[in-house]
Length: 374
Image (tube, rainbow, N blue to C red):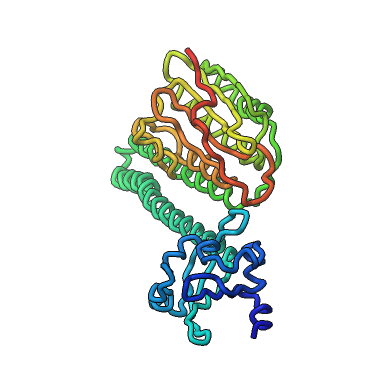
C-alpha cells in the first residue's frame, strides 16, 4: 500500500487526530519543494496557510471529516519552502488507523487550471466589453447613418413636388443639399472601413523611428498647416515605438488632424508632439495643443465610435476610436487629459515584447510627457 501511495502523481498527506502530519508521499515533496523529514510532525498549516483552523488542540471534532467537508475538492493556496504561493485543490477523506481516526488529504497543484480559468475570465470580460461596444456602435450607426438618408429622401420629395418648369430654379439648391448629405454618409462609411481594417489586417510590428514618422505626418499636412499658420513642435525623450508602421501613421495622422481641426482656433496656433519612457518596456506618445480642450465629462466618451464634442461639427467621430483600437491592440492605452488645451496620450511598446504575457504598462504620472508653454 505504501508503494502505491508513493507512486501516484497526486499528493497524499495523512493528518492524525491531533492535527499532525503523519505521512506524505514523494508528490508532496516535489509539489512543495520540501523534504518529508521537514514536513512530518508539523501541522497542515505549514503547507497550506489557514488550514490549521480545521484542527484545534487535538480535538477530533474539528477534523475536516467531522465538519462535513466530505470528498468534495476545496481550493486553497499552498506555500513552498521558498515562500512562493500557488493554487491547489484539497480533498479530505476520513480514515481509521487501528483505534485512531485520521484524515487523508489528497493534494493537486491546479496552477495551470487556475491560469486557464483566469484567462477564460479575462476573455469573458473582454467579450462583454466588446458586446457592449458593438451595441453602442449599432445604436450610433442607426442614428448617424439615418440622418443623411432622411435628408436625401426629404429633398428628393421636394424635387418631385417642384419638378414643374416654373419651380426648376429650386432644384439646384435641393441637389446641392442631397450631394452634401450623400458625402457625409460616404465619409462615415469610409471611416468604418478604416476602423475595421485595423482589426482585420495582420500587423507587421517593428521598431519605428518616432522622429521620422512624425516628420512624415507633418509633411503630409504641410499645406494645411501653412494655410492656417500653425506651428509644429517636436520634443522626443523616447525615440522609438514597437508597432506596425501603418498603425503608427494612423495614430499620428488622427491626433495631429484632431488638433488642427479643434485645437488651433485661439491666438496661439501651435501643436506639440512629445514622447517619454513610462518604463523600460513602454513609451508614452503625446499630442498637445492650446485649444479649448476636452471637458472631464466627455474625456472617455469621445473615444467611442462616431462620438464628438457638441461644438465639433467637423470630422467623422472615427479617428479617436481608431487611435484607442490601435493602442489596445498592442496592450497599451489611449486617453485625453481633461482641461484647457487638449493633451492626448497613447501608450505603445518601446521595444519588441519578450512574450505575449508581458505586463501592461504602469502609468507613473500621466501628463509628464510635456505640455506647451506660453
